[in-house]
Length: 228
Image (tube, rainbow, N blue to C red; front, top):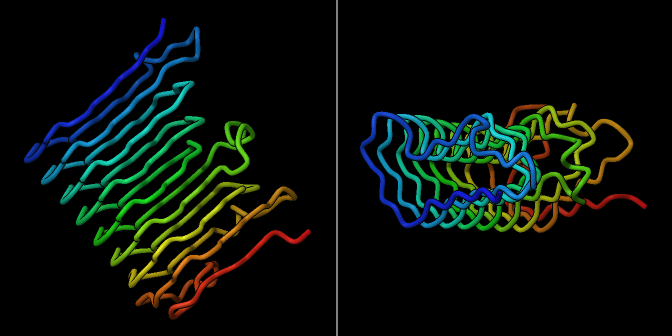
């Protein structure tokens, strides 16, 4: 039986909880592997907790969070805390949330064409990316063509994802309070590293003082390719 969830075109505000929360394994299609979720074109603001949060679920098809506007949440703007082989976060505006703008943990993700500004934590935070799931894709992580500005921690931070296959390109990363891009050393150990940071505009961060970072002060273009 095909399972599908679509949440589209809603306006949610002034809730004492989350805007959208999907949790547990109750909607997982464990037979056909054809379950999917789409969260698209919603407006979420002034929420006590997270704007959009998915946790403790294990679907087998795609998860898309697209074209939403998420503002002034008490915790994270968008949080995906589950193993998932295909996560697309695209075209969203995430602003003025007290926590991280976009937080993905364990799932294999693409963050594209988002505006992530003035959040209290990192702009984009990725942790514990699932290597088994990632074997299905060329890159575990793609962050491209995003505007990541004025966040109170790192613009982009990646932690605890060994043998990382990442593509970070075409982003405008401006005036974040710590580093432009920070990748924890444990994320790049092993023989299968294929990191590309291409065409990103990095502007000066206010406190770029961490020794384990990929960050250039001032406005520069990073081009780092895998050596043949």
